[in-house]
Length: 131
Image (tube, rainbow, N blue to C red):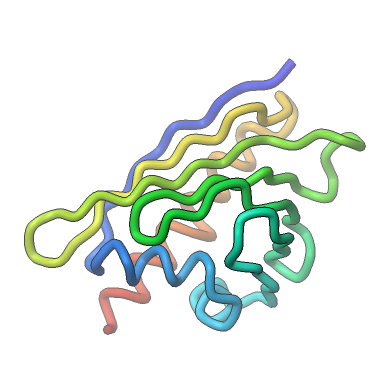
């Protein structure tokens, strides 16, 4: 059985800049503090956190939406989720990031839910707080 995760965050950066942090290998590695290899084009492969997270880009609409087939290496063989990041401009040059992840294996839901907050949203907010 699999579950879905729904989260949102407000980040003090423009949608194009927040999007770039997720799709640019060097920027992604800088804000997460871990190695990343990310292809920008639809169909390209990605890996983050030194290869612990891997997948393929399904849809890449700069500053609007990013959709990934996403998995952690400790998931059951062949198990992938669909992670969707939607970027909406807010007043003051901020971004509302709406995130959904469909198909997370039950055993991983709690750690993945906490992981997005700890390893993505908080560091993203911190990166833009200092820019």
